[in-house]
Image 1 (spheres, rainbow, N blue to C red):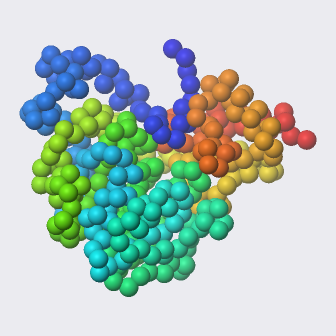
Image 2 (tube, one colour):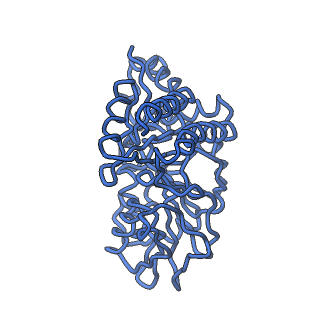
Image 3 (tube, rainbow, N blue to C red):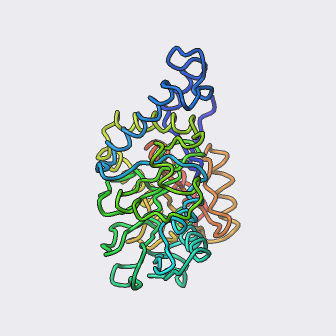
Length: 361
């Protein structure tokens, strides 16, 4: 089997443990004679899969009892529209903190629903940093404040979250379960699964009960959070295989030591790649300011377009996958999500150092 170092931004690397478990159970799950993909979502066999994933997520994230965990479809992009549909009433305003492309898209959807306010924006500086809490300005009569905790395209990440008087909602699609987070600080957290949680097709939403109670009554059933809360996320056929894989990924995280160990590993992995950048005398130029650097998505450029193309070509030949920067900004990006092993980051550090030595003036 060809060995590759998977730095794809999403869908991303999955733990070998989870993939091997799925392989073992692919044709005959729990002696049912069927694959988990063939089970009825109304069966007790699947219900156990569903509830296990939910319980494991609650344990690992220390989700309090007064929060509902929902398994939804449509990706985080659907959440951009569901949020204002459910919680932005005519007399209120939603505040958005802009730190990259995904927060811009979230704001765009909210503008179609109701009144919005930009609490802060890093666009003028091409999203090289996260705004400080002193820069934030909030609206009167706010419905909620929305932020994106980690920015995959620009490689920035919130280190500390702002305290807000109105409900704080976070899109954590690209760094959920990469570090310990105080769930109590948020009224809602949501995340597409395809970076740290499992395969694409599943979105996790964690919503405090008092926010759920504010859901507008004129929302179509399939787009109402209350609908999915009242039916244990089984209102319609859920993405059963993605939820099954989520359970295996969460089991792997628990088996290696939970959030303390996962956070330690992510700090260590990111430090390897940032060291190669910082010791390059400017050969590798990071997009993000040091105080805003992401542990999940490490973005950088080389001195010329020709060197960038050469770097990416040689990296591909050496077994590195997914190092191209996002099409909107170019350059390079290494996504070191939870399942990317230390060895892959160490190999990339060595490759970057060797490439610089061979191509510096």
